[in-house]
Image (cartoon, rainbow over the protein chains, first blue to last red):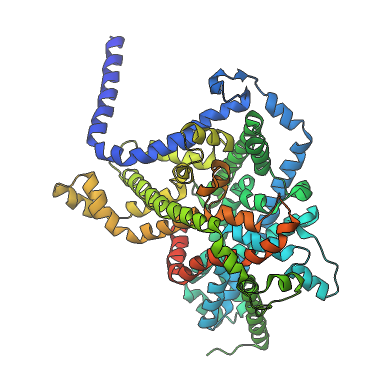
Length: 313
Length: 285
């Protein structure tokens, strides 16, 4: 009888879950705090993201607020800011990868050519340093150095140049963001490449020397291919995070005069959502960003599977 | 010793010069701030170019900072967040990492999927903000800890470290009658101390640096962490006030030194762990 088998299967599934629960009771106990954290601070907000489709009022609650469908998405897509925000996000992030990604690789290759180990260690330790300065302080230093009578303008003036209002000029925002990013992370980022270089077999270099290769040829034909896998993995990871770049640094460095190039999706969400309390509209913008971000991650993951035969997630 | 060609020697020379310049660029900003913090603020305003020693020695900035109650309450709040937050994060992360590393835990893959999915998709800033408000954490110092208690990358690193402990050790513990709690606390944790140290450092640094969550969840100034106070002093984005400019100028550098020197002093000792952490993170798989 089909009914009976279904009920038996149900019972046995239920039975299995109960047995598993008893068998693994301590495991569930250990997992519980993290599970509560993930549900409360990740999955409940995912459920709450539906306010992007509603006219959300705090007093009415999520389900009590009226369903408005794609109203806020349409409002965003048809607004003047849509094109500007997407362009700014992709450009700032893309240019940051273009310039910021190769920098630590080059540093690692140059450090690898240094024969004096004490000098090498010193350079490494010093270039890690900016990574340990908190973001607020680092941005404070950036603002101080780039202001009109700041150090960088003093140097420009010393060489007869015109003083530049770096952080009040939209065309300078991206260079300041990217170059300061290199200052902050070049040393730290090189660690992983140096360890990859250290993992390359010395026999390869010896064989190359016997064949008469010079240092340049060794770098080009042995060192670089040796760390290529690391480079590809890290590049894929970076590209996957294209839409979620460090907006905290943008918030600290931008101001109304540079919104033209500096305002990105996340900072816009912050201003409209947190500062203006336009919860539904800001959630719609954020949800758009999240969806693009996830699509990008899935694409990148598929590429990574092809390239190196392993999934990143 | 293999003979180096002329070209290689020239390159070696350029390389040393280039790397030295790079090191100067990395180090000089902190040196400048240090020298500026001991300078006379009036003279500093008109000073132009590099600063190799204090311009008109003065401790005025430090005096103002020491009298500034905000800095010290900020310091207190930050220490609370860093110490309590790191402990909570480490405990919750390592507890969760244990079942997730057990092959005998049936729903392991389901929970892993649930956790890693949060790395790909998030409900967004606003829904999260509303949840934090709803659970009554608004304007509470716990809003800086609980909503960021577990970092998924760190959890995966911990899980990988736990999974690398040889099965035979746990099996022999099981035979001796140890349950999962005992195995976790007595066998696994002591064997993964290095990873725990690295994660403690990671969590500690992220709590130390955090300012954004504080800026959206906190209202009372008495609860502000140090970084938020520093933001007011260093980044006068919205309130450009000429009266305060001289005052701000004088305490800015001293504020940076007072808030950064403890980290930089600890840094040579901790660097080893950070470097180890980069490696652990890299092989997370």
